[in-house]
Length: 119
Image (spheres, helix red, strand yellow):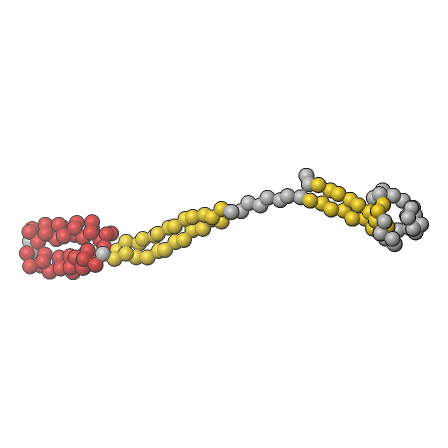
């Protein structure tokens, strides 16, 4: 706890009085006093600030996207051209390639930056 100090003076002549004094002033004989109280305290404050920044975007791999489009639209024509069992096998190979290539052609990217400032 901080320091508390009190002082008193006569409101008429300004002479010093005890803060607990009652009655007339011993210097001027009039009644009334001014009491002053001072409190001294130390306060410590701490704060913190946290932040998060998000940047979301779709990342496109141009060459994988072009290859995927060629596989999707080209494989039916290739199967028609090769027809029969070889056409089915080639179609399955290209479909499998497209299955694994597709998710990498367009990817959603979320960049998160976190930080804090302490004071």
